[in-house]
Amino acid sequence: MSNHNPIQFQKGIGFKEYQRYFGTEELCKQALRNFRWPDGFVCPTCKATKGHVLRTRPVIECACCKHQTSLTASTLFHSTKLPLSIWFFAMFLMSQSKTGTSALELSRLLGVNRNTAWMMKQKLMAAAADAESTRVLKHFVEVDDAYMGGRCPGQKVGRGSPNKIPFVIAVERNEKMRPRYCVLSVLPNFRKPTIYAWAVKHLAPTTFVASDGLRSFAGIRERCDLHAPVACTGRKAVQDSIFKWSSTVLGNLKTSLAGVHHRAHGYYLHRYFGLFQFRFNRRFNLKELLWDFLKMAACAEQKPLHELRLA
Image 1: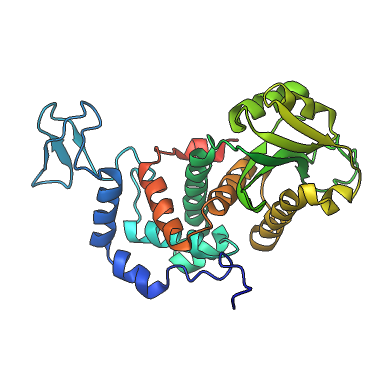
Image 2 (image 1 turned 45 degrees about the vertical axis):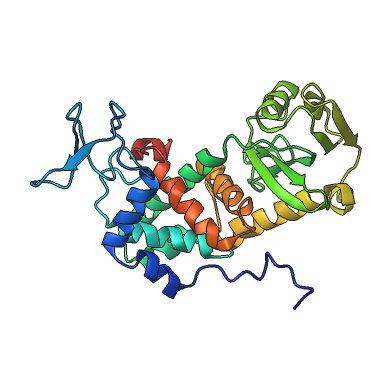
């Protein structure tokens, strides 16, 4: 067993342990209260720290400005008709499952209809994407361009196909040259200004970046002093040790999308990427991953349904 990958063989949180922490509605409410207000109640309007629960309704009234708020108001669970225990169980499944969980599988396990499960999953994925949107990589980073989508009958094939969605995958290595963090970003195109804007957001100026010979990756050089483009074609980039981990993570991403979700609509692809990135960057401690997931959801902003649908 000593030769096994310790990350791969983590125990995580079992169902019995989960039940001990979040097995009842009251335990879930208490957990949400602790995540949202770890130092005690804070009024969302005036930031005062004194308030009391009304006798007639389960809301908290600020002692200073008299503003009334509930435990779930203006959060990811705003105006939800589902018990918090259902939400928490969904986060348990999405964080502890190795390959992820589809909306259809959530609907079966949670006992809700498919539309409700889809809405829950989209909200949680959007929150995860927001949490990872400011991720900055440093030290040694592999960067590669990729496309999501297949051939569409009667349309152009290759890079210019309207059915293909361009995105960038970047993997940071640690001192042992093992993968530490990744960034997955859907881009409108692979032009130099677009790549430069992405690099400013996600790469530290002192980062050493290795990429293939795509011309637009010259935009990285304007952000990072150390940029080594490696000219390669076909499967050479996959086989090259320089791009070993970006190719591995890319393969895991596509396997997850194809095997668990079967298809991901282009409108929502950045959310699937955000969830994958959130899980990957916290894979070192599977037990802590659940707590990070819960804290992320508790601190996330409200997600109206019309924003979730995008179209």
